[in-house]
Image (cartoon, rainbow, N blue to C red; front, side, top):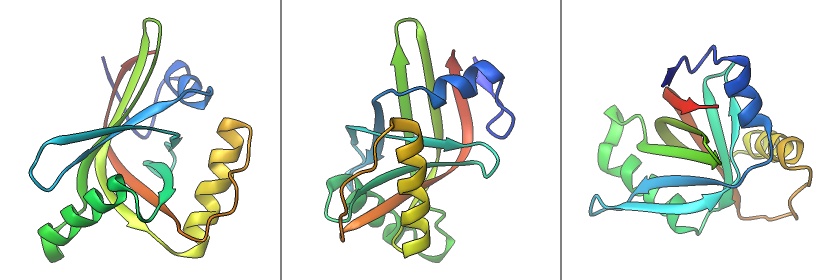
Length: 140
């Protein structure tokens, strides 16, 4: 079932606010999918999903490699985040870029803390995989 990224149903949005481990799928340089467990926050007002990560992680390197390969016309790596519980599931898709500025990282950490009920330990190598969303699917 398709959803409006910017105007999700109350049920779909509520599902994204519950505490769930999610997956992030990024493209490796050879085009194969790399899927890892992550925490995700969904901001429909901005049309964004965010994943905090270490700048040395494979997922971050995959997004950076895709950005570099696309050059100026880019738009970021095509990625998906997904979560499920029983028969409920939700997927968000879009273009990801890596944000390193302090304000973006602090905002993403605060959103993560709100959703997951804990503030991550300080990490000077933390970055944000910021996904500009263009597709939402699921049954919540």
